[in-house]
Structure formats: C-alpha cells, structure tokens
Image 1 (cartoon, rainbow, N blue to C red):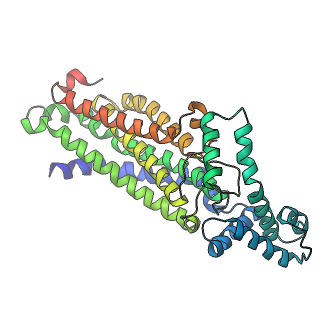
Image 2: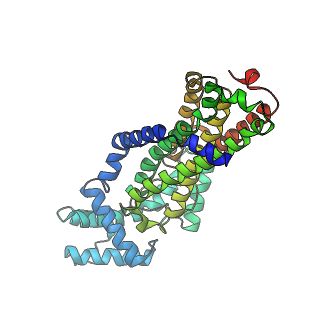
Length: 361
C-alpha cells in the first residue's frame, strides 16, 4: 500500500507533462535530423543500398572469392571486357555511371586497400602499442571484412548518445523531488514520529528504483521503435569492423551486439543518475538547493553519455583517445552506476539513524 502511494507521488502528472513537452522539444532539436535524413544524401543512400544487396548475396562478411565475384559483376554492368582491368581500376570506368555503380567500385577499392590501412597503423609511431597489437590481430585473424555501410554505426552512436542524455535527464527530474517534497511540506517530521514512518525511506527508495526502471524502459521503447523503423537492424549480424571505412574498433562485435553495449551504457548512466538524485533529495530542504546539487551531476553524466557513446569502442572515441584505456566508455558508465548506488545506500544508512533536522542541507 505504501509503495503504491509513493509511486503515485513520484509519477506526478505535472512532471510527466513537462517531460513529454521536453521530450518533444529535445527530439526536434537533437534527433530530427537523424530521424528524417537516414541515409543522409544520395551517396549514403547508394552505399546503404549496396551493402543491403551484398549482405543478401554474400552474407555478413566479404571474402576474397566473393570480392572477385562482385568485381566481375560490376565489369559486366559497366561493359568492361578487358581482362587486364582489375578492381582497383573500376573507379575510372564507373565515374560516369549511376551512384550505385560508383559506390560499388569504391567498395571494391576499399576492400583492396584495407590491409594497407591496417599495416600503416603498425608502422605509424603516432599509434599506441595497444592500437598496433589490435591492428596486427585484425590482420592475422581477418577481422576486417564486415559488410556494413559507414553511416549505420555512425548514425547509431549519434542518435543514441542524445537519447542517453535525455533519458538521464528525465530520470533525474522525475525522481529528484520525491523526498525533498516531503521535507518541504513537513511530512518528513510526521513520518519520524512513528516506527513505520522512520522506515519509509526504504519504501521510497524501492519506489524510485521501480520508477527509474519504468521510465527508462518506456523511453527506450519509444526511441527504439523510431530508430528501428529506419531499417538499420538489417545489419544486426554484420561485424562493425568493416572494409568500407577506415575506422577500427577494439572489439569484434556484430552491429546488434554493438547496439546492446550502447543500451547497457545508457541504462547504467540512468541508474547512476537515479541513485544520485535519491541521495541529494534526502539531503535537500528546498527545490532550489536540490537543483543546484543535481545539475552538476547531470552535466557529468550527460557528458559521459555523449562522449562515451560517440564512436563507442573505436580508436577515435574521445574518452579512449584521452585515457588510452580500452573499454573506458563502459568502465566509466559502470563507475557512475556504482557511485549512484553507493550514495543511495549511504542516504538510507544515515537517514535511518539521524533525524531530518540534523541531516537536511
């Protein structure tokens, strides 16, 4: 019964209306381009169409035999009969053809030079030892031939990093006022006059965890449906380490697994935000003091989401480039989660032993 009442207090219609309006504004400002323009432009559309065609005919990876077959098919389409013309030279023949043929020739050329790109990493003193070891492994194990267009992982990280920011914001805004509201209205003092009331904080914490889970799942469902309607799930089995672009990733993941890692980071950050919001809500007498405390935390979590998910697990990820730690994006999100849960437990411990008057700030 008490849990139900606490959930009702958290799911305040005014806050929900505000979050709905904020979501619409946020989507218009940060997500509209991603949703409206995918693939973005005729070149990207041709690349996407080509990779769709190749996954249907060759599977999720392109080997040497399939590369040769693709080159022969393009020669026939372009009317090239000279057997001396190899895939490197097809760019010249395709430049006056349609966009699809041009991208076809470009993909064949990209496949041919992928080994050279990886070998250049081994020779470049600007790359770290770990990066050289990764490039060497990709060459040795042939982990470089995934059939997936450049824009699919790029678009995914761009879209979901902004979704991560909004989910963290909505979780913190929904949960933060819960305990502070009781302090502000004098309910907290009344609760401390009874044995059951002194334990209400555990119920409130449970209600906040349920609410954080609920709003996160709802928003992931809404934004996920919008994203999947664009069609990128077609490449869910394709390795993200592709020959079609020069980016290199630290892990051998399929695109579906890559999306799973993105979602995991988002959930960890949202949970960390929920725990932190609960902590500061317990130790704030007014909404103003509460906002002053949680805004810096939100900025930090938003930065972790935006920077961590952007080009996640690649050599070019900002957090990886700054620290040199492989997987730092996931470690940072896990640390945020652990910190939020630790702060929640601290609040529960302190509030169970001291009065509201002694602890609120």
